[in-house]
Image (cartoon, rainbow, N blue to C red):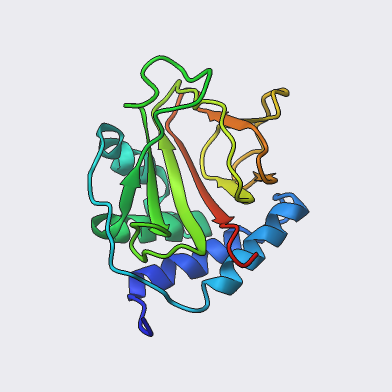
Amino acid sequence: MNHRPENVTAFIAIAEKLFQAEKLPEAGRQVAARVFERLRTPSDDGARHRTRYPACEWLDATLAPFIDDDTSFGAAARAIKALEPDLGWSRRSSGVNGSDGYIEAHVHGMICGPGGAESRYDVQLGFSLMLPHTRYPDHSHPPEEAYVLFTPGAFRQNGGEWRDPGIGGGIHNVRNNPHAMRSGDVPFLAIWCLLTREGD
C-alpha cells in the first residue's frame, strides 16, 4: 500500500504531536517516536474489525467537549469522528479486578493496527473509551506502550497507587508491566500507541 487515506494521515500527524508533549514520561515519548517512525510507511492488509459494542454509543458524548476546540485535542477529536466509519473495534474480557460490567462499559478503537482503519501488525495506534465509574482490569502484554489522556482518569502500574497524570499527560508501560486504568465521574478517553515485538 503506497497511498494512505487523508483522515488517517491527519490523525497520525495530530497524535504524533500529542505524544511528544513534555507532560509525558521521557520513555513514553521515546517509544512513541519509534511508533511514528514506522508509521511514515503506510501498510494496510484491508482487514477491518467492524463489530460495534455498546460502549461505542458513548463516543459522540465523549468527544463533544473537544469537537469545537482550537487545540490539538479538538483536532484529534474531529479526526476520530471522521474516522469512525473505518475504525476497528475491540474490547477486553479477561483480567482481574475489573469493575462490575466493565466489559460492556469500555471499548477500544483501532486506527493503525490489526483490523483498524489501516490494518497492520508492526505497530498499533488507537484509543480507549470507558463509561464513567469503570475500572479496567489489571493486565499486561509484551509490547511496550504509551498513553495520552484526553479526560480525567487514573492509571495504576505494578499494583501501586492510582495516579492521574492530568489531561495531556500520560504513562509509559514497559513490556509485561501489569497496569490498569479507571474513569471517574465523566467518560474516560485516552489515545495509545505501542510497538509489537517484531522488529523493535
